[in-house]
Image (tube, rainbow, N blue to C red; front, side, top):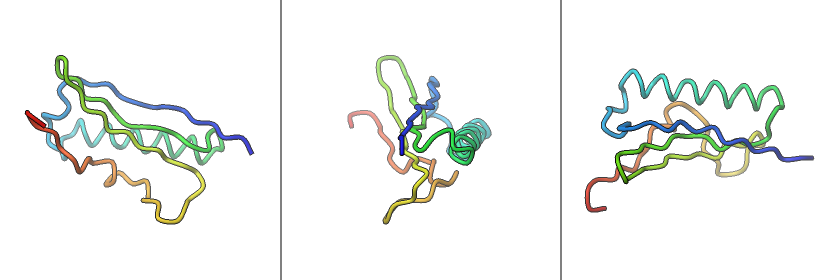
Length: 93
């Protein structure tokens, strides 16, 4: 079996300043979920790295997820809810 990995990442300035329930964030999560599901369901991919990078000047925060077609023990389901980052980085961290 061959393993194909594609990286699907948004790069957006100032994303961390938006609320997790904002329209733009919800849309971005839905697009990521839809594209990754399509690529896995149609057997185009076996795995995909997806997410976004928030760029503010010289600082950035990356939120990346590895999604695999074959489910493994202890894996977290790939849902829109799980795309919401649980870690936040503020000044000085």
